[in-house]
Each structure stands twice: as C-alpha cells, then as structure tokens.
Amino acid sequence: MMTKKRWTLIILVIVVSVIVAKSFMDTNYFKIDNVTFSNNKLPEDTSIKMLQISDLHNKTFGKNNEKLISAAVEADPDIIVMTGDLIDESTSNMEQVFQLMEKMADVTTNIYFITGNHEWLNPGTEEILEGLKERGITILDNTHTQVSVDKAIINLAGVDDYETNHENLSQAFRGLKNDYYTVLLSHAPGVVANEESTQADLVLSGHTHGGQIRLPFVGALVAPGQGFFPKFDQGMYRTAPDQHLYIDSGLGTSIVPIRFLNQSQMTLITIKDKT
Image 1 (cartoon, helix red, strand yellow):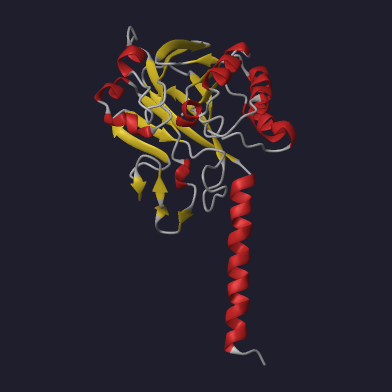
Image 2: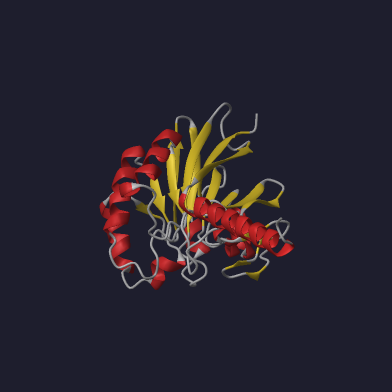
C-alpha cells in the first residue's frame, strides 16, 4: 500500500517532469503567430505580408537554422522585418547570423533590420551592421523608406535601440508622407511613450521576450525596462482608435536560457485594406 509520503513524492516528480518538458519545448521549438491589421490607407483589395523576426540572440533551430529558413519560405512574406537582438552581447562569432541572413535574402529582397540593445552592448557593433549591409539587408537607423507590393504602398520607419538611447524619432519620420500606412520598427516598446511615435499606424517591437517565463493567471513576471509585472509584455495593444503596438515575444533567450509557457515564435503580420 502506497503511503501518503510516497504519493506526494510521485506527484512532485510528475509535476517537475511536466515543467521541464514544457520548458524544453517552449525554448527549442518555435511557432508562427498570425496577426492581421486593417486600415483604409491601403487601396481596396490589397494586402502586404510581413514576417517579424525578433530577439534571436544567436540561437539556432535545426542545423544551420534550416527550420527557421523553411518556415520563412513557407510563410512567403512580401517583407521581412527584424526588430533587433539578432546577436547576444557576448556573441563573438557572427558567421552563424550572417549565414542565416544570406538564406533569408533568398526568401525576399525586402529585408529590414533595426538594432536592439544587444547589438549596441556587443563590442562587434560595426561588424554586425556592416555584415548585414553586405548581405543586402537594409538597416533602418533612424530613417524611413517606402515599400510597394502590387498596388499597396506603406511607409516603413525604424529607430535604433530606444533602451540604450540611440533612437531619433524626429529623424526617422522626417519627410514621411502620412497618406500612406506607416509601420514603425522599434526594438523596445517603450518608444510609444514618446508622442512622436503616434505618427505610426503600427509599432512593431520585441525586447520583452514575452517575459520569457510566464505563470498561469499572472502572465509575465518581469520584462527589461519595465520591471516586475510589465504593462507591455507580448501581443497586440491598441494605442489609439486606429493605431496599434504589437510585441513579438521572440525566438531566443537572455540571462536565463529557458522559456516557460511562452513558446519561441515569429509573427506573420498581414496589413490589408479595411473593406
């Protein structure tokens, strides 16, 4: 006959095993979230698909990141936007990231990158930025551009990392035509505290890792730049009637190399006309 103590031990082992297994899955297997935004600034019956990749932190999924590349090919985006922290502050060999970017450039030539805090904390800042440019990646360093897909045209603006005080919104928006739908890339979501960010219809961010470790009924415990129980941790936030902030919870990890109840992810964002 099983004693109460033995039953307690068995239950404890089962619970710990489930937590470990779930953490392993969330950390090492990614998903693609699908999010749609509609706005009357796009012509009727048009849409643009953007694949957002954030906070990779030099992590790999499959040999030579083949799983990430296959997922990107299958998603078939018009644009790829990379919202910072491709590398970790301790990354010394950039070759892994450069190989990934070369493969991503085969998916679409419309690839745009903004810096995160780890690109600035890493001693190889110039190496990573120059290496990305050499591989055809456009760096939106407090600048903007226009991207057209069929009949649809959007403004795509990007600021350098907000958390390390490298952003310049005034410069990024200078000369921008507000007639077009405007997407702002900012690694840290805290940029929405700046009134100038309201020139964007959509702000795409990362940085928080979705809290990295989440608890049932509680959500994220902590996020960088926000402390405990962050206001902005992951997903969609309406900042005005027709304006949104979307935070991708990212692919990699930082400080603690695990995720829990917060699976690694990329996001496929569809922007379409309101009709």
